[in-house]
Structure formats: structure tokens, C-alpha cells
Image (tube, rainbow, N blue to C red; front, side, top):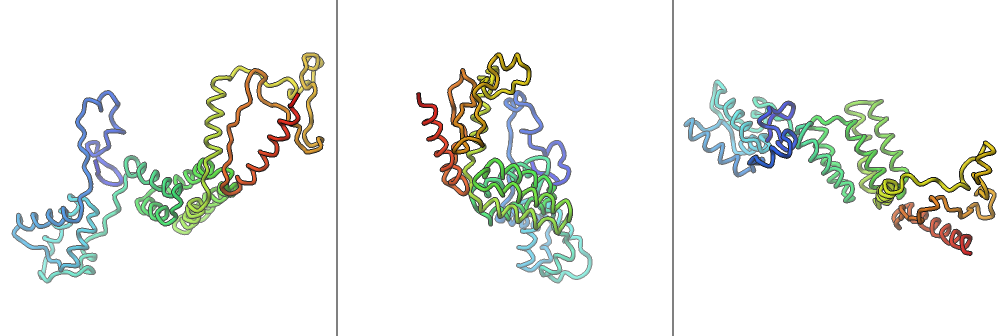
Length: 304
């Protein structure tokens, strides 16, 4: 399934992206995995046997040639063919001579298919797993493969909101700043700002409490989407609205003794729900204490 990192032919594309589910279920899919060093070495040996000529390389250069193939047997054979066609002396080339005659292969990375989704997912999981070293490695792999740095920047902003949230509210600011720096500086200077943001995210606490709370609120909203807000918190500029009870007994929180009225802001026909459940990680530890204090005040003031 691997072709050119820039434009893979239709036959080399991942069928998971190119075929619909009905057709895919009736198709036998063969996954072409990258060749390891031993397999590439065997392939090179067979090529030499078929041509009757050994490649003009010393041992170090031969190992370097295999490494340059990056698991791609076709690319290895193409390079071997170039070396076999070199004119002049058959004195074995060292690694420097090899580099002079053979251009370094662009890392295998299809920005539209497998490489794109696999590596951004791996970067995401490395940061979630608090591993800044692995995260920097996968970031470098993506950028070296030609990924758009602004795509990575957008994903980092999403990560800051989804995985970190209120545990470190500065995370979003850091990612937006990295995005802005790259747009101002461009390549290559701006890449360092993205790397800095990756390290910041990888070393920040990650409770995903806001993400889980928002998803839970979405589920409730879909089931209770027609319920009206409680009348006491609605504005009532026309007299008719006041006669209907809009705004009646509303308490302005800043004017209360504790700066907290304890009012119920959920619809009257809906039980109170707890969506956001902060952890003890990072700044959420302080938020947790504050919410616990407000819950105590609310229960005391709503007690008959």
C-alpha cells in the first residue's frame, strides 16, 4: 500500500480510504509491510546473484545503502541498479562515496493516507502518555516527511483543550502562541515553537475532565432539548414577561454575602446533573475545592 510519499498511484492506496464498506467486505486485502534489514540484505544478495556483479561498496556503505532504503525493496533495487551502472573503477565506495552518487531517500510519509493519520495519532498518544522524547521524535518524523506544520499546530490546540483543559489553562495559550510564531517566522525557525508546544503539552497534567463533561452535557441536551430555562433567570423587559414570572426572585450573585446565590440554573423539569468532575491534577485541584465549597452552600440554601 506504500507508493511515492507525494503521489501514490491508485493501486498503492489504502483501500480503507478508497473503497466503500460494502466493497471492502468482499475484498481480500493484503497489507504490504516495510521490509526489515535482514530481508533487504537478502534482496540485495539475490540481485547481485542475478546480475553476476557485486555492488562496489565496502561493508559500511552496504549497511548504509540498506538503511537508506527505509524498508522499501523497490527503492533498494533502484539504487543498486544505479550503482551497477557507475562507470570507471570498481574500487569499493565508502559511505561518503555512496552519498555522493545516491541521493538520500525522502522518508516514507503519505500526507493524505496512512502515514498522515498514523503519525498524528502516535504524536497525540505520546503527548497523552507524558513522553516528551517520543513526542519530539514523531513530530520530527512528520515534519521531515513534508507534513504541513500548521496542521500539526491545529492538532496541538485541540489536544490542549481535549486532554489538558482546566488542569493547565495556559496550555491553549502556549499552542496558539506556537501557531502564531510559525505563521510569523515560517520554516525552519518557526518549527522550534511547535516543538516547544509539544514538550509543554507532553509534560502537562491531562485529566480530560472538560472533554468528558462536555460530551456528557451533549448527551443530556439531545434528550432534553425542548425544556425551557427556569423563569427566574430569564430577562423580562416587557410587562407581560414579568407577569409570567420572568426574572422573579432572581439573585445577583456578586451582591450575595458569599458571592454565590446557589440558584438552580437547570430546567425545572430536569434533575441537576454533574458533568464537569475535576481531578486532583494541576490547577483542577483548586477548582475541585472551589466547586465542593459551592456545592455545600447550594445544598444549605436549597434545604427546606
